[in-house]
Length: 188
Length: 379
Image (cartoon, rainbow over all chains, first blue to last red; front, top):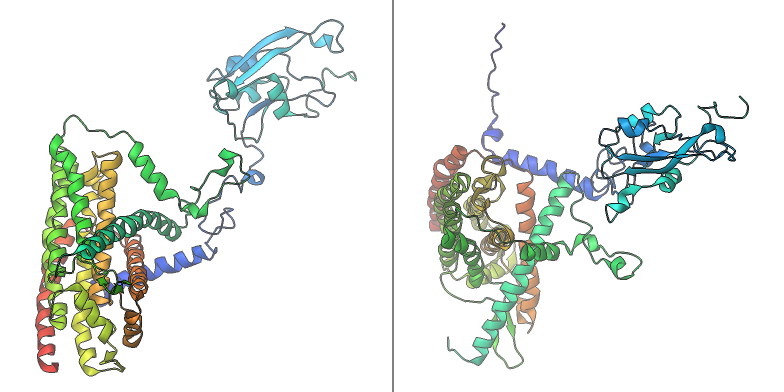
């Protein structure tokens, strides 16, 4: 093993006297502070900072348009282009969900319904957002491409009941997704 | 000085005005300034939200005022928090320690001249200093060093090794720097010739600030005598300022409470208002320190131009203008304190002791000799 011998740096006179270097340091912090007050903090623009510091002023400014495609926000159910509920309540997501946040009550589709051949749809579909860990396993496991993690991340509520997303809420967040699964369409 | 009704009343008003209105407000807003300035230096924003929540009362928009309500919110929080006394502490000393740090800091305000004087319509002239005594700096040194008892007792009473180390460090630091501090102002007092802080400021009002001595008998000019004296005075200033930093446990010397080594130092076990009292004591000591530096070296309430100062003094309420001048200077020094805190890293304890005993002590003694020689030849 090669031994690397380090020598202490030789201090100049002004460094030995301490005070000149302290003044130098104070000049550095002051220029930094002046820049910050003038709203010219370095990297403030790329970080969406307010200029007074690189901090983003959160509720006023948001990161939303910078979120990557694969961002995992709240899970939500989607309908397809003809307004059919994609979910067939197979309950795979309920079983895979690590924190057991999803609970599904399957329901039968009546025979006079347009989509009677799908046989099942969820009667109730609750995701407890206080339990959800945003792992995305439900999205991965879904054979019908019915559940997706959306880009929303600000889930707030004033009570535990408030934090449970029911079926209507999930469809409201999810909206419509087109394509992907065509096996139930009339065309086929 | 005869004791009459005007004297008693004016003293009561001065006590309330200077300690409870001006100084407590400055303590509160020094914490706010500390947070904002540190934030600005570190590319952050700092507390800028706490304001009046008008939306709670049906308003359209909250008023933020740049977060200026923050100190009030902090005070309310500290008062309402649980005042927890751990089971293993020495109760009596644990309870009196915060008061022992806070009270000396506030007592020192008694001799600080906040302004020149105010003439009442009745013809009474009232000096804007609570106690116009002839031992000003000595009083401050005597009382200010008492606050170390609070810190040491807090460290010991907490019955906790980290707190204890903090308390011990504080004592050692206080003793080391007290010497340099006391010796550093001897040259200054030799120039003034007396110890009454109000007279000291009056001298500076007539001859320019100690560190800006560009006047002689009211005439502007660069005088050799003044410039020669300026050198030892500047050395005194540097030593005194550093010692004030050390005495108030501010950043390069904040070993009694350094978070990285001692958790919270002497106030580790304290919570709610007892902790806030240590905090207030620290900031009040900072204000007293700034006030003393300003009074001794930067002309106290004097503007710095003899003609202007005498004109202001002649006005009946000119003292108020001088009071504002003084406060501006003190605030500038407090900002400097904060600025230094967020620039300079902490000393190691051996470096601190070496700086105090080997450098500043000797330098202060040599400085006395230099100043004495110069004074001997020029006066």
